[in-house]
Length: 180
Figure (tube, rainbow, N blue to C red):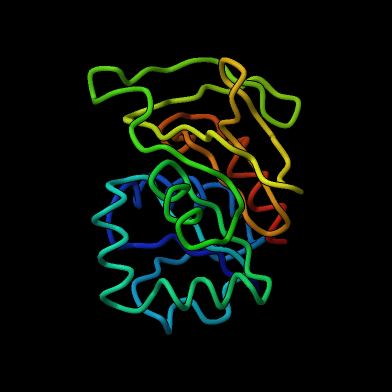
């Protein structure tokens, strides 16, 4: 059975894991990822939202950053939400420009309706980054105020909002379908 992991070092780990667990239905096994060994054999990996500098520091400390890049280049599917989106951009896994905390601080967090894959979904933006450049071959999956908030290139998916903080499973199902 294929495995889809959630990076378990900081951020909205439990929320992502709970949704994946609820939709797995014997199609895949959701797992928590803390070590390089945990990454081996994964079909997909979620890098959750959280504090990007803390996540980046821990990735480097445990050499997980290099392993994620290696596995992604070998076809593992990777989805980064909010801080995870920043990390994927910084690791060079998707050609986008991204600006941290672009909408402002915690007080400027908001929720809005988005369209994703032909469906209306809630988008929760908490100290969210903004995609300010989309490279060649990067597909825009969702926009807010004219700017991309969800993009994909091949096996890499990025959302600047937090689907895991809503009851809507659309984006999680999309990622699962990528992985299976």
